[in-house]
Image 1 (tube, rainbow over the protein chains, first blue to last red):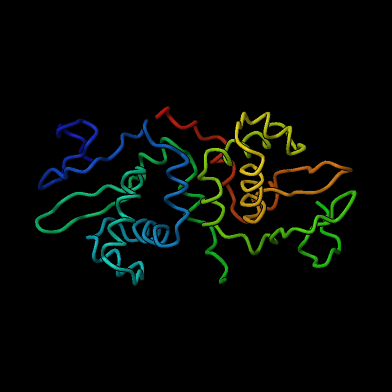
Image 2 (spheres, chains in turn blue, cyan; image 1 turned 60 degrees about the horizontal axis):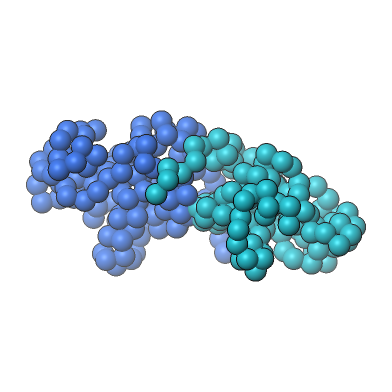
Length: 125
Length: 125
């Protein structure tokens, strides 16, 4: 992950360009924000898909995760995940590429992501 | 934990009396409900305190967790935790006793509770 100088060292610079949206540094991750972010079924599905498939353009991720929601709603979910520190968003050409900040999460909250990713799916309501 | 027959086998009977509020069976726990329940700072503090001190009357738990919130708000938090499957509520005399359903949680979501309980506290805002 490239955390070279943007307008703030904590804001990652993309490979092709700066993405001028905040990404928290690992020491600023809040457990309650992580849990709230992953407590939403759509966001959890997106994160499970990212973990399984690796970094993805956001349109492909939405498709692969089976999220039949509006683009606006998916953008909101990306924002919640990014601001919690769960995903990294960067720009490549005209695409927005999302990836899981697995190393940062594992370092700050050991075992948490693995426990969540390996958990059984929700029973049908 | 006593899951002997109440009006439904999944509703636990307290030592001194039935508590007629639903407690989900472990196979009905939903990961998203657990994460949402623990994503609230007051509820997380209550659960950390229960884990550290063991079963507690609800008034003492609220005090020990340092929760200066209304009784109504704390009752709401208990409901969210109980309905997610995180705590067991039972009646002993005139007291309402709360405990952590650690075994049920560990069996259904291995490693999750430990990862959450051992996580560093949130940085100050």
